Image (cartoon, rainbow, N blue to C red; front, side, top):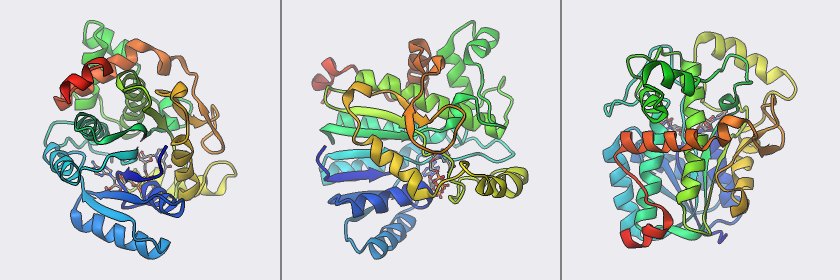
Length: 324
Ligand SMILES: NC(=O)c1ccc[n+]([C@@H]2O[C@H](COP(=O)([O-])OP(=O)(O)OC[C@H]3O[C@@H](n4cnc5c(N)ncnc54)[C@H](OP(=O)(O)O)[C@@H]3O)[C@@H](O)[C@H]2O)c1
């Protein structure tokens, strides 16, 4: 991959901020850093430039829970017309005690995936993704179901009970926080990251040859702002404990390195979910083998649900050239 232009979403803090800094130090020519407001993105770009002593950061306003903001960001990128070599879809959020729905009717923890889908498809359709580009989307070990206090919804069972077995409708209901979905922040987060992994697998089938996408968990990095909305138990008991237990935490830089490592992976493993070894939340990453990640019906259900919620689809590669 040509180390030319990278775009990092959610670069204003934590892993995204660290990743943008690492990319600059590794010689990337331009790093587009996004924030919910232009002011925050500009501040971030200035701070990164001062820290790394490299003038390679371009601020971009991008609120992933606002379709109009994603459209404006896309329009700006189209105006600039420079294809992205590394798209790091890092932004994500752990919701608070009370369920929040965006103005577009999406549960807050799910909103980044919808916005990332709109952004990615928009860039692909505009021919603004380099032929050998790598796309990394931030996942989480929570999607495996073996992290204490985090379990995900059994989509098959939920679909059978409420949607006559239609998994796509079930995923959409979970994304929208529908009437049969009992909100619990950790479960909503785990569900969001399950769908991230399934979506990446479905996107991989739709990318032109040469490009690749991976879901990658940064691992446990408690020094970021990820727990800002978390319950007091998580924030003031679990997180401080996690920092003390060996093997339970790593720095945002170490976490960000996982994304950079994945940006060098081949197309042969496109669509896979990389995370710490099973039952671990730090250390080297490996491809996850849990059956639910490899179930094509799950992957396509997530894709169709995201398409339905976002109103944006991407045809298979053979028809992509006809679209652009
Ligand atoms: N830290 C961990 O232990 C851990 C573990 C597993 C996975 N992850 C994942 O790693 C990624 C980075 O998290 P982090 O730990 O670095 O947390 P963080 O410090 O809270 O950073 C998250 C970034 O995403 C942005 N963001 C969130 N929702 C957004 C939205 N709807 N639109 C635009 N920007 C949005 C935030 O912007 P604002 O500040 O404006 O909200 C912030 O820049 C997330 O996807 C997270 O789920 C983290």
